[in-house]
Amino acid sequence: MGQAFSGSRGELRGIERFLSSLGLCMAMKLLRSISGLVSVLLCVVLLSIVLCSEKLSDPVGDLLDPQGNPTAGESYLDIVEAEVSFEGSSCVVRINVSGPIPASVPESVFIEWGLLIDADRNRTTRPWGDWFLIDNGLGADVLARVKLGKYGLEGEVITWSAGRAYGLPTDFKVDGTVAEVRFDTSKVGNSSAFDYVIEIRKYVDNYLAMVDKCPNQGSAWIAVVRGVDKNPLWPMIGVGLAVLIVAVVLVLGILTKRRAS
Ligand SMILES: [Ca+2]
Ligand SMILES: [Ca+2]
Image (cartoon, rainbow, N blue to C red; front, side, top):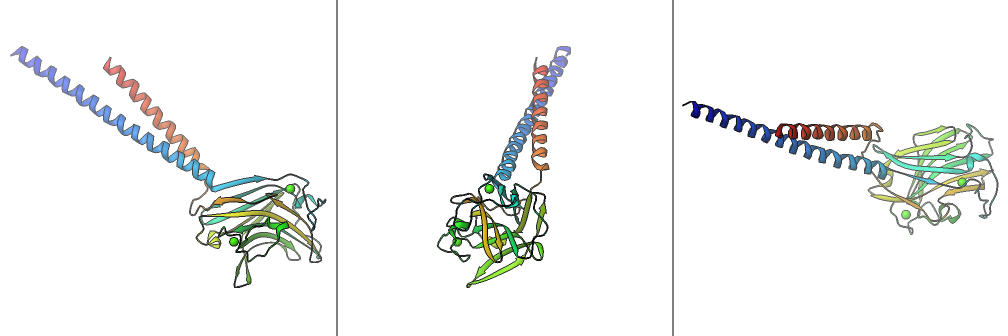
């Protein structure tokens, strides 16, 4: 009987060990799959951040006169870097120039820090016009800009319909050397991507005085991302979660090995 009793107790312990290792195995499998899922999510978040914005750089001292020849002008007309990104339902354009942007100019002067967009990616549709000096041949359908004239600094987004331009006020910000304008992505219709050129124009007495553009030749393009909030905490949260999951899996692995030995 004693033999039989100790035998069944041994079997019970074996079953306990089996169930315990089975539980650990399942927990580890679950954690591994969660870890995999978190890694995939992390990659998606990082990829979406990369796709959500694009930075371009531009040489200093490359202003052009109305004939396209090199000229010199104020440093706040000279593009150094430009970034297009998407935040929620907005497209955001930041244009960094080589000198502080003024809050006012003489009444005869008009300046624009703008983003020209070919929303339908069709160069033959160009309601904005045909002005290679400024647009490098882009078929521009939308213009978003910070403008500075007799009314001071303003933000505006312009679209065209049946030969008429429709300008609407839009959010903007000027901070030191950066002009920022943001507008609703509905302005580019259902486009999944658009081509663009960043440009700065200065007019004196309604005549173009000088221009800078970026890129200097051709155009850039960006995929339109709708409804993704740019939150700098997301990558940190993702990395933190991934590190935590990997740490838990490692600890469980070490514990399992110890129990087995
Ligand atoms: Ca420049
Ligand atoms: Ca077009």
